[in-house]
Length: 203
Length: 263
Image 1 (tube, rainbow over the protein chains, first blue to last red):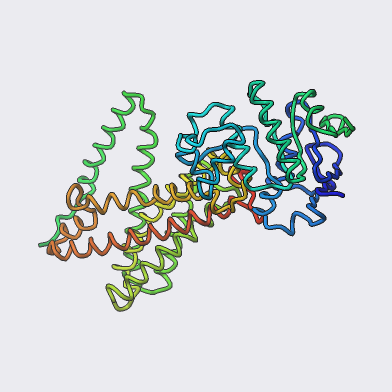
Image 2 (tube, rainbow over the protein chains, first blue to last red):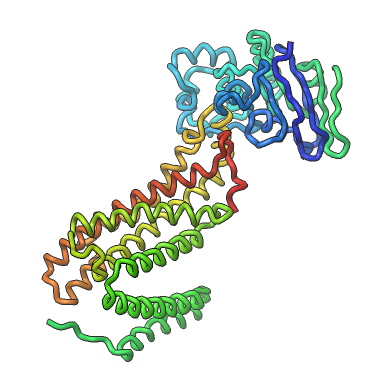
């Protein structure tokens, strides 16, 4: 059954894209820099206007309030942003409930008290991931979620995402430049080439 | 006591000070001499023109003429607001929003003062209406220009975090709240500082003028207090309106940040 449907989506100069994603499916997206991978994800999160149409469980994106759509179809950007003084300020809800979730991504509870700019890129990425997962998105759009991470952190992030995908039957769209990673996490592969169009194949 | 009248020679003497400053700035290569001379020239011509128009208005004393004068002042202030912004909204939107905000605040507060507080008859007595509106508008304009410029500049610099907040499901108003607050604070700082230091560090121009013209100091002081309150209120409401209007315009109906609406 289709969970997330993309119709007539325009990315750069490529032919309009149609795509169906099932619950629990992961699509890997690759392409050279400038091929429109990030623009693709931004369009899906409705951050850029696009003539195409998006459907979640058959309902068009326009029938959702935009903030509700972005909670359901959530983009994890390549670079996370932190705008408040302490890490914990970015997480709504009681702090006690967070401790368990932090432990699941291998982070200590007292990290909530630290300022965000003092964190390592691995810590920042796991926190940013945890922050978006707390919204329990139905479709997760991942923009190179393991870029700039060491092997240990890559494996950890992949494991967290896999677990979430299985637990919530959510669909993932995973932009990566690493074909080995695409084979590890995804069942289908979309390659974006602005000069030649896009190419979809099974992995 | 009659005021000492100033002759063109007296003003010429004052102008030599500007010339001297220009020469010094040329020697120091500050690249300010040109702007200084143009500004001094504009100041002279605009004030002479204003003096001439006021003379006509005082003679005519008709509400229509006063309103047309106020409209010209308002539209010029809108132009000044836009020209002071580093990244104005495209399509003259900064101009429209600035003019609307200044109209709603300066106009309303001036009318309130004329009708209710000073209670002068007729309300359009030009000796009151024009200087009052001019002072309101001049200060509101500074606040509005400063705050709109701060908003568009900081939004441009903080695109990543504003969009990061949208991605997490915040509404546009939440996502831009920090920038709205900073912009309003910046717009209000000058008038708050000037209220706090007036009479201690600075003697305001209007009060000085009234005293020079022979008013008793306490009369001049009460007028100055009135003016300060009116200016603070007019600037405050104008800044709040202008910043919220501009912020609204930076997002579309799907709560997308539209930096393409900045030039």
